[in-house]
Length: 233
Length: 293
Ligand SMILES: Nc1ncnc2c1ncn2[C@@H]1O[C@H](COP(=O)(O)OP(=O)(O)OP(=O)(O)O)[C@@H](O)[C@H]1O
Ligand SMILES: [Mg+2]
Image (cartoon, rainbow over all chains, first blue to last red; front, side):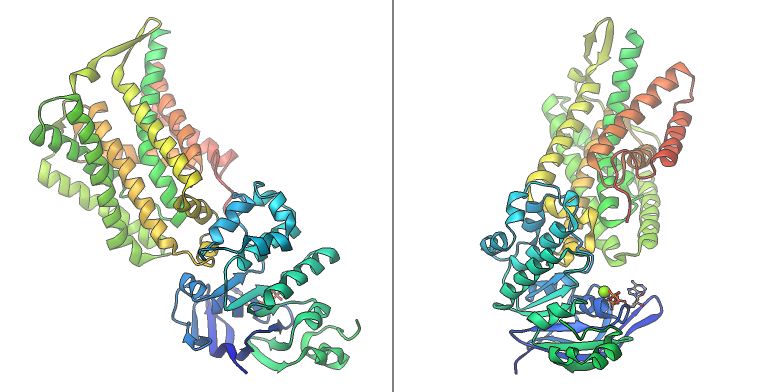
């Protein structure tokens, strides 16, 4: 298996609290890997440490390249796209300006983006701050799909979305997965079962399990690992 | 009424000078969270550049020499500002208190350097004779220089608007004012935008310095300090990071100061500070500022 991402003994300390306490895992190239765990165990911090938005120590490899010493914009330019948990779209800019800002490639792939989210084409002159939560999430995902990337980091893209939009975002991720590797933090277990090939489970700042989504069908497992009953569906 | 018109336009002109200083302060704070107390020193540098150019290089008193001196003052202010960012501010990235302290120190150092080099007495800068003319509005006669300040500030405002609206760097600055770390998470080196903002802020301040030599009939070591205080008040009233807000606030501060000073002997500065307090109470984010997050 080719590894798109390898974390070895990654530690993050913010204002005295030791949030990531030696995180180790590998992400298989070309597929979707789900990063799971209860609230507050460090999933978002893990993604933020990969892109250098929090100070981190340890080794982070993007394919063969060590990226733990790079600044955030350098990590992104090395081929990583990041969709943060709280969307973090620019509310004072228009939809199109949000997308333009994210352009890195010579020929950003607006076709794919507008095919997946026709809504964004219709609303390209609208201020992003006035979009609905779901539309804002589309902007956040679209920003990450404009350029060719080696690795896509997506943090809870379906949080707070209506079922129909959840499906739409999942479709978008599936399309994206054909061309890149995705590390996806997600609480929606049916979605993980649908699109993820592998899962990684975190607890209290460390990785406690690596496996496959079918394991989630065992209610005991789901309860123990995630504190939820994710068995049915 | 004549007096009112004269005072109003004078205040408007003073506001234009405040705007030139304050627009850079506002952007620098909005984008980087740096309170730049050295901004007055950029203005003074521009003012001395104007003095030097119009007395030692092209002392012909012509309008063209004056116009060239405005441009040179802008460049001097811009270079000073970029040097400040590259040599001092850059290494204190995200250490806002330290950055502010360093700029306070630089302000002091610059003022004493100007004092040592140019002496404490104001050096006289004679503007071209055309600027001594007056324009008649109703029964009032208003110095034409006032309109020059307003015109230059308007040009800077328009240039700023076009840059912000239609260029990539403008897009980066607007986005950065809102959420800097997300800009970097899109693969953009936001520090280049910092340097650029210092450049344009320093240019506007230097330009303001050149014009201030006309407004104040010369330049002394503390010329910039006087403007800096009102420029800060302007920025806070207008809303940190909002250039249009800064423009509106500059007019309000300039006209209020001049009008009140005339009608209520010397209370202009006091009223401006009261205005500041009022805005902070009622609308802490300033007239057009965004709520901080
Ligand atoms: N900037 C910060 N300062 C202090 N503590 C932080 C900071 N960021 C995260 N934490 C703490 O680190 C822990 C992990 O947070 P993180 O956001 O990574 O969790 P998570 O697994 O993404 O949770 P959720 O499922 O709720 O999104 C939490 O206890 C959080 O309070
Ligand atoms: Mg999270």
